[in-house]
Figure 1 (cartoon, helix red, strand yellow):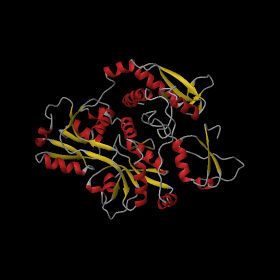
Figure 2: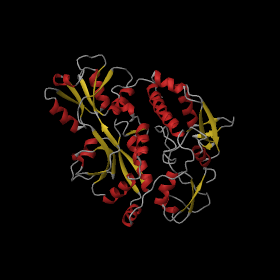
Figure 3: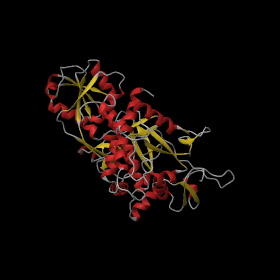
Figure 4: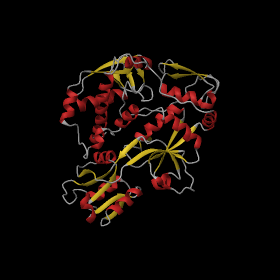
Length: 442
């Protein structure tokens, strides 16, 4: 793992730690509750049963932190928001990557759309013939100006009329606006943000006009050299981003609109903060590390109690030496080394015990968990550091079980996690689900 990647993870965790400290000092006596669910009309229930899997397109390019495809998995703010919607609506999502933004997102209204839903599309008139746009979950995203570090030729918008400006080909609306606002500029095009930054540093362009401060910050932090500066927004229109549902899927749109109505502003704030779209998003420069003020705040934190499950292999468990081990343990070690945090490890026998500790404010963090399974008023979550599939385990000499359809009418044990239970209840309404605290009990 490169130093910049580790730093990005640690910065995300630091912001989450501040959120956790504020949340855990909240009102005492909070009650556990499952995430909000929606009441569907009979026609919507019938549609959901007839369409058990929703195909979701994920842009595999560099549209970070909103969506990307990394290590064979979808990742980003839009992915997390779609999962939150699906959990409320009882839908199962299948994520599929695509590379051609223009043909998928901007194809003509008569061209078939290969996906049921896209994750993070700008709310603009050009999308309305092709999609139903859901409620925006990202607001006020700015177009920003990037220049070579130390280059005084470009200091702001007033310098663009005589400059070579690199834009990304896929952002056609931005290209038209820049063309109209700066008719004297020479526009050159890149296929993605990384190429645009390379063209800038090689001298093939004098300035780069990029989409969203958060995305530019992420792209700059991923570079191996410190050779560009984000000068900040410069007066162009802002964008809102929302999920886009295929125009002919009215029932799916109706279901998702009901689901989005259950998501609170607090949940959205936490979701945005997880991916760096908080107060830092308004800063006109990229952070190269943890600032002195941030380190001072970290040093002032008390010993943080971290709860972990003792038998959730390979993520969180006690090894033969009686020590905390697994992927989560390695992650916590990296976090400590980078931040100097002081921690106290608190073992939990199973997920149920861990959740009770959270509600009783006996711990400040959990080492491994899902944002769908704990009330957002109790915990905030960092960016995911691991993904795992949900699988079916059956007896060797039992009835043949090849897939979810074979579970209809049977009794099935499931880990007592609210998000998983919500999806399975919607997918398997005639199956008896028994919630258990751990895989071993199942």
